[in-house]
Image 1 (tube, rainbow, N blue to C red):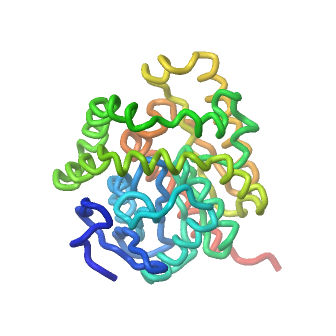
Image 2 (tube, one colour):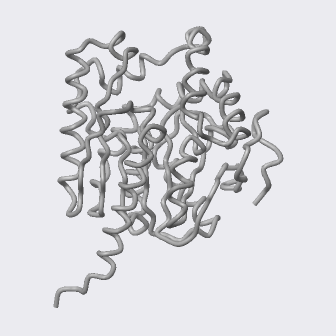
Length: 311
């Protein structure tokens, strides 16, 4: 394992370190002790340290891990998009290299849901539970209006010129979201997140959404493990300006039905509707809801482990 004195770009992570996986450096930061370990899978345009606040809360009662998948954040660059299998295999190797014992509780946000599902398909014995943080699902297009399809999301990604125009608004958004983070961590993240390099990584990851859903449909369903899904149905003025009220309602209804279908497919699943925040702000505005969901999944896992087998 190498230290964090260098970075694959000009950015140096303010905490954590690098783990070599398949000849490349993967950024990882772990806190706490005990198990099952909780592993956070970031969304597109997000990085592991975006979940630092909830990670520190979870680390009070178990091991909590944040990381940047290859090609994103502080990790070494890679051609994007990647297959879900490549991302899941990388994460599995990272956890083994870090000597973090499974099975794990995967806390997946947004795009991270695709990768959590693929991890569960490839390594079902290493998944103890799932926490769905307004995450994507392989059957997304079946529940959403055409305007919000995966293909439409791929086409709507901004280019560099648009990103430049968005930069002042993004700076304000990041400053507000990260306001409670330690100063050195907050400033480091804001600087990196406003760079063209990191912004384009988010665009590149979103360019393969439909292919990822197809990849997942070729494999098994989510395993029958304890699961809590947080379904975000809040809206703000920016969304209302870009999306019609009818489409927003269809999206919220689709999200609610999609996550309900997901949790109803497992023996111990629960959906919780979150209406007072937005998709990208869930872990910043409602860390209480995120940490409670994780605690409840861990409690279900513990009860399952100590339930005597039926004769």
